[in-house]
Image 1 (cartoon, one colour):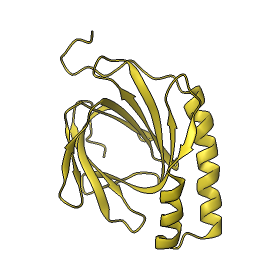
Image 2 (cartoon, rainbow, N blue to C red):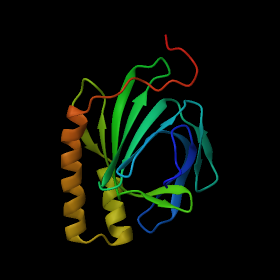
Image 3 (cartoon, one colour):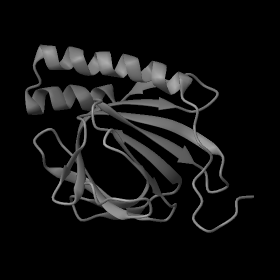
Image 4 (cartoon, rainbow, N blue to C red):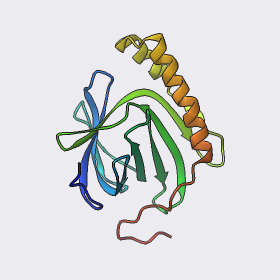
Length: 170
């Protein structure tokens, strides 16, 4: 990871609890340190699902992956440059493995559409994952504690300006 630098394109894999990749995409490094990688993605970029389906993101994204936290945060911007949403995945700390940034998504998420308050979403997906991956009661409680902390983070988060990709915003 020491050789990563701003502007590098990296592969990101979102994995299920068993390590199986369910979604992957390329992202551009905006910032890198031993504690954190920040990436950006341009509206229109492809995202690959495990089933072979490809879709293109509708919004510019900036993602924060902390190596010591059980969540990652995504700033979602309209193509005009306005902040649309703060989205937080409750997930394992990311790992840098074989040139790929990987994290295990634990299905529980936080969504904030300013000026509305942040809310926990996808609790039904988390409940399904609890059964499928046999999450212990202790693990479930930890993930809900992370989600409650992430609610506060989403409420206090100050997004950077929309990333630029050579275009000007209206």
